[in-house]
Image (cartoon, rainbow, N blue to C red; front, side, top):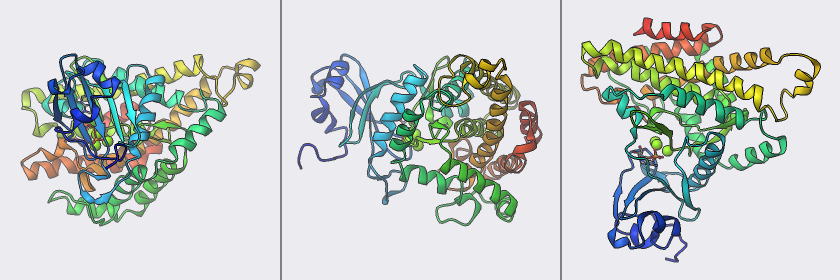
Length: 414
Ligand code: ADP
Ligand code: MG
Ligand code: MG
Ligand code: MG
């Protein structure tokens, strides 16, 4: 072994290997004998260590050369750490304070040393447990709006945007996971699929709908070839950490330039899945209140997204697109142009939302909201609601219309 060869860390080797890194020693303490190291990765892909010492704590995230969930039979490039690092840096610029600060990045070791979020918990856990998070919709709406706007040519210079699209276009295998698991596998008998007993008829019905599959493929085409803005790429409730009053976004290794509606669509799907799974997690006397809170978060995400995007349109439209010379400079208001773009983005987001609702119950990587339900009959019934609403969104995204109609649909299907 040469010192600069990639080697996965273990809790036993981490101290000796990272003590010489200033960014770590400064924050944790210079004597690794006094550190405690825990591996806490609960995700599907990477190693995550919490390193605590007399001076403080950091998180060390290291990529593995394969998919952790599946094992070394499914190799996956280490370079995803490189893209995650670049994504975190851009998200911190575009929405300051929204992501953990990066303290150190090592390309060869595929590792990122970052801010330890405490006492934050994974949002998905909090939603299953029935915890409310103050300011959640406001935070997520702003995160989606700021990263969407500031990562696009509405804000960026053309040359900078093209350079960045070029950089992130090197992230191939990771988005390919999304292309297969999210957009394709749910709609045929793919090898890694599984679904709950009792859903066979619902699933067969989805797969027999050529119109639905064509709509999903149209969304995949946009996902793969439209580079409107830098998307997080994996913005589900397991990629958000919250206290009762504060939230952050983590884990952007699925970053790519993609459609503006992708992140917000995927995010809303995860709130709807939390919503539909609630009857299995809450007693009757708390159920209505918590489900209504979840829908209020959806409402706030969407309203704040549109409000913040519009504010940035009015105050930061410095890129190549929709130049003031064409609008304000000739005495026109550009508010209609902004509203038109948002309306298109909304429809696109509804389609992505429906697709994410399908993949989380049909292909690999299901979500705990449903997986933790022990009564399989109840689980199938709640998942069927989720699949049904997903199909409605995919088929009728163009006509579904307003936020009120979306929330009404969720209540009707529930
Ligand atoms: P993966 O890419 O494997 O999904 P994540 O980045 O989602 O890895 O991290 C896995 C888990 O590690 C998270 O669910 C969370 O519990 C924990 N974690 C990750 N980053 C941090 C952080 N900055 N602070 C505290 N815990 C973290
Ligand atoms: Mg993760
Ligand atoms: Mg994961
Ligand atoms: Mg990840």
